[in-house]
Length: 380
Image (cartoon, rainbow, N blue to C red):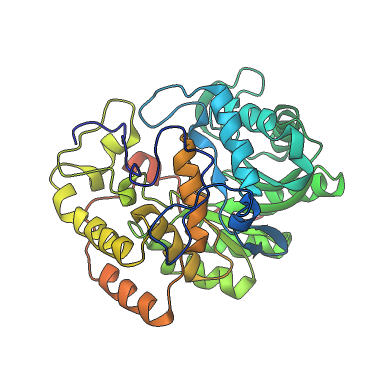
């Protein structure tokens, strides 16, 4: 495979026009067709708690619905159809951000959920330095309290709603004490414009301070079989504080689906081109992990993507992955991962094998990693 369009990565499950098919059930080897005696509600995934927030056990990340990794522009009506179908499949947790687009993904999500807005949870994020009117991305971060409040007003308009269910700080602003950020969010909560809040990719001390100021519902961080950094301190801290955890890039930017091989090269504009874990010298060795996932997919009558998502779900009952996609069949399959279960013995065996595989290369370019694990300055 020399390109990154990922054709047919789940083709054995889906044929053209068969997009109404239900997710594969654990222990079966064939997709379950939609039928009056087998209604779509039968495939509804379970529920989980992020703090006190009740959501579906698998969410939908909509980041690429305005622009894919390959820099193509998806069909807007098709993105609306995927959002609608996800809801019909039981997904109630939709993840966006001001920075995605910028602004445009929030508009797409707001348009797509109009008919069922009150039955779902919308999460979005502030924190990058983005012009409030034009959406122009400017250097650095901006979590000044006055700016946060203006950002939220724009979010509400783009999302066509009167409240944001879960509002994250996208990255920690090194110029603004986290207590001031929490205070701004607390004000928005008092006005009913925000119901819950969280942080992304923050430092350990910052999370403790934020939670002490205003109870944090969830944190979001990259986490998958491909990158297990949160196991060092973040997952234990979330468990200690009663905070939910939302892994972004739960499929390893497509790597864990089996769509990438040792010959894959990425186009300009695709962030994977500048992530060293996908460099030609590292891909062959790192693909050992994919071979393991594929072997377990065959063993469990599932797909590699489903195994990767089911593994995350098995980590803790308060872990809720948000795989993103711009393809209907991929969304349906991702949701079906909620049906794949590991016994305790299977999980231990799989986890031991995965832990023994060394992944070479960094998860992000240094310039992007510089925004992770940042500690906010002391309270003024």
